[in-house]
Length: 383
Ligand code: LLP
Image (cartoon, rainbow, N blue to C red):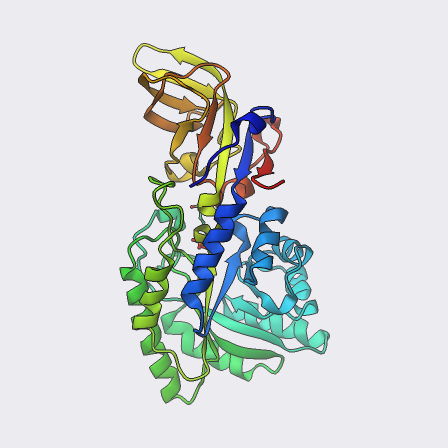
């Protein structure tokens, strides 16, 4: 459970992200213990949080890494990740980004189209190298999560459709300067029900049987990320259900001899260790609502505005025993700049500190400077 060292953090300039590194460590430990002895490799998805200190902890735990841009590759290398642990995904890789990946002999490009495959082959040839590639398949499986973070339906822009997969695999095998490694999937994010993963396993089993009948061996299968966290109860469930998640694949996916199963987890690793801390600027009693106006806004944590996400809000400095209902809003000139409606909190006053929990994933990394604001800073439980 995350505790906040109030006497220290009350002096920090707000808003800021506060990271509980002990929780991050415990999360990594639990994840690793669930895959011990299995041919499973977890790539941390940098997109969830690229803070150098966080990357350092994850690198120390020995994870591989999943990048979606040249910038993320640079951040991963700077944190000490080796090129041969990098999986590079994304529908729109530029020539420069592809060249960067090839220069660093990355573990694998997750390729999203045949034209991209051809460009990777061309660039590898000019460098006298062979690029490892996996093809990202769009398995047409509904992850039943928020529509903005569902990725595995044929209407989504991601991956190669099942109808076109045979031709794409043939192409990958025929091109001289790419090395075809296997298949990649990612069906969506923040999944708490594992049924879609079971369906994914069944789809992969069918595909493996199909390719085997064609004499094609897959060295790796990459099932992407998506394991969800408990946003409603961060202290009750600080560590996600890694066991249930990995067991789903263990039970339902028929791995072949010598085959490796790769994962790209982001949120599950860093989500619960991060908190956005803000200061109450004003408490304004309206006619129908009481508003708490804090100095953090959608620019610091965009998830509520973009995905209608709810982050538990806590007044971490109030000693009041009486509670009231508030809408919690930020200072940005947008009505969507709202963290919560009708949240019950201890009676709150100007100067109190409000914590928005479970903000370690897609929080700091998605912050922006709209309204010419400063980006939030970061502090750690161990400085
Ligand atoms: N692999 C691929 C190909 C992905 O597209 C993603 C996330 C991941 C792995 C990592 O997924 P995770 O384990 O973190 O669920 N900004 C949104 C989430 C966007 C997820 C994008 N792709 C949010 O704040 O909920």
